[in-house]
Length: 318
Length: 160
Image (cartoon, rainbow over all chains, first blue to last red; front, side, top):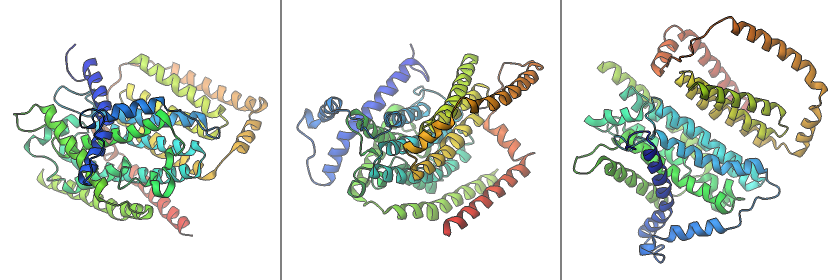
């Protein structure tokens, strides 16, 4: 078996790596947050607390996995599976390095958007089936936030697609060998960053699960591994958004030749993950209506103007 | 590939039947999403990759989300489910089944008169876009005007 795009070895390695990285991020996030807040964070289990994740995993697997009697069982069980499945599927079109990837698809960008829109069902069904006021409020907020920010995410990607002339993520990376798209598409990059955080509902946009207001939102009734799946799903989403920013705007695996391409990719992705964690430590959460009006009244016009200007420049150069 | 076509087609038909038979509206909606995704797979296997992904984004990802959003607000409980069940008696099935059977027979009759090339031709994004903004540009513009009218009236209603 060779290591090429779509081989079993490649698929298995990507699947295992992505899940392990997402789980380890729980520890990374706690350590980084405490670094910035002048604390130590988890440092007891194993070297530097590295085995904390293993301890958490054992705990979460052995906890009681309770389905409330008033919940709608079918959708309650289905919801956490959707978010994990959808985000893992999105990783299939990400080009990690030359020869490393699951599928080399001509509709990669669109596939990511489709999966992102299907991800909204997870939070909706989770909140709706829980039959709980807070869960429903969280799900309503999550749905409005996700379907709104999906729009800006899609439009901000279109600038890059227009410059490359392809929806294929591998070609988008290769087209950046003369210069990363973050320079011509800086506005698109900023909008994509904001929309990406909102899409994965991370702090500061964790309004659907704001603990201080609505318990923990759509996953209030979840326990045990089902909660764990929502939790790991959120970290998987974080890795996905960081990888997408790397691929679309920062040249993917491209970099000086003294390091192998996959290392460059990992460094860039980790940089963005660290930035997201720093955002969590630094920025307060906006109010729900502020988030909505900011999106529709500011991000939408700016992203449309960005697309129009990009299109006009491409046409005038041709 | 052709096996995938038949599997996806079977899933689409089975899940659509489940949509009709299901009395719990949320479950029915989940089956409808499954059915739309199966249709997207059918499109993909036939070579229409762009249509497939649009089916997933627009129908399964956007329109069905709005359906679920409305259901969330309506708070339909056990009562509506019982009412739905009471409507599903055997008698109600007779007339629709006959009419559907007639349509199906006509459809099969028409289909059997053609012979098909089963090798799918891939239609890329570029070809579809060139058609949409070439010969069909008027239809695209009309559709966008219709959507704009819908948007304006929704805004007006929401303001009241």
